[in-house]
Image: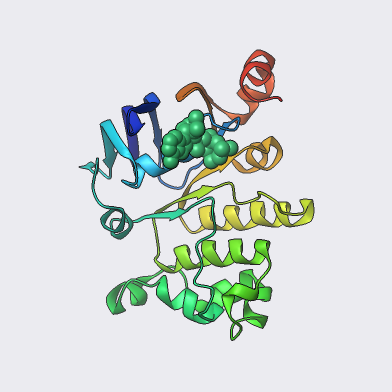
Length: 233
Ligand SMILES: Nc1ncnc2c1ncn2[C@@H]1O[C@H](COP(=O)(O)OP(=O)(O)OP(=O)(O)O)[C@@H](O)[C@H]1O
Ligand SMILES: [Mg+2]
């Protein structure tokens, strides 16, 4: 469904992705793992048209290389960046409203406000509060929910568990599995192996802007050399 072929990305003259190739199939959870600076966020930005990229980038058979981020979102790819992007002066509910894509799309959406509030009761309690007063973890959940309100077929989530307590990390894992249950594919950018290994169908490891491993979580568990060279600190 999503296909990267020999994708390169640049920040000005700095060449950061060196020929990245992988795919994400419908309903699949794919973990994109790697150390700090390995190029995981840049991969997400390249898919979303937020950095200069060259190479093959296809979504549902369409060439989306260098399309604008909002067009890519409209084609069904949701993106939750590593820095939470909420509107602090708007209420939680208004933030969720902004994630919706227009009347017709709302009608056919997999997700309703009630779904979001059922998944995250904290957001329901806070629905009339300014989003800026939420805790970091709550803001992260709000960003995820706002993206889901746009009913993406694939959601790219950049380090959703960063800075969260272990209990909450487990919850995030549960939520991501629920997305899969509703047919949403997930590209999960992570550094923590535990959650990624528990919920993913496939694991990718990045090192120095290339994919150095593409296989199953079990395969990665068994591959001590790859883990030692590219993951462990
Ligand atoms: N805006 C930018 N301008 C120039 N170089 C950048 C920029 N953003 C990232 N880089 C460089 O690109 C490389 C990959 O960064 P990227 O953010 O993709 O890493 P990452 O795997 O997401 O790691 P982490 O999020 O843990 O920092 C790094 O060497 C980084 O210094
Ligand atoms: Mg990153």
